[in-house]
Length: 357
Picture (cartoon, rainbow, N blue to C red):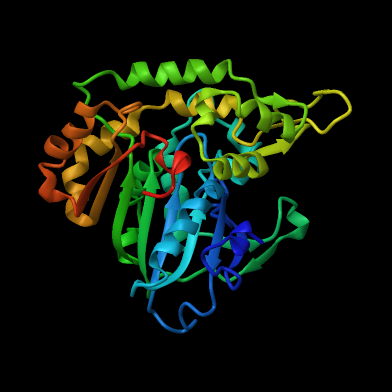
């Protein structure tokens, strides 16, 4: 069960959680991993009432890192009239648990560049439209049980995406059969969506800088405890909320050996590495087409679904002028968004450094 169940101040003792695998083959080759949270008291199982929330993450993160944000969200809404039916989080196909399940498949044409935006969009699309089968179980194929797919057709969904997760949600609308013909999407809520105008700055330069950093980044530690200690000394992770960092260590690392390190030896402990491999991180940063597609087609998307867009007031990753351009030029003006917000004290990793926004 998720540690969400025991956290105060929200009375989460009745909140249930389950992890699933969604297998879209033969329509699409990469598996999805998802987590579902629900409370039997929220809505009657046969009632269409209540929103379904779906969270998508950014590069280098994974579905479990949304849990502190979800926890705080439940705290905020416990005394108002908003009804939540259930909450879902989904991994990108080369991140988190999905990266482990797809380890072999990801070596078949997904390096040296991984089309992250489109592949994540395919996972989202396949799951929401039911193009595949839902499995309850673990990494071992012998421990999996096929269960009926979840039917979202009679419910209303709100999708929340960070960085590339936001872009992938939009790209999922372009796939056939249309998601919009299957389900009612109330709105998209985007946090620091990874798109910018081609005339301001160079996304290609930024992508290469990130790829270069990932190629040389340490990715093996003698134990999860040692990994946590190292993260606490590095500027990137020092800015994260400690709950989020501990979740990253608990659910974003895996023991050796792996395909990347089949013969690794690291003393007498239990060495660990990243589920989102260094090779896949580098490949993910190298693919830069999705941001441009979204920028050029943003008016079309905004006419199809209500988009709420939120940026951090700290412009550490996306320049201030790029954010303003997306709002005023790409979208055709702020009137084309359902809402716009700038979050105090937050940069690109807003949901990791602070989830009270």
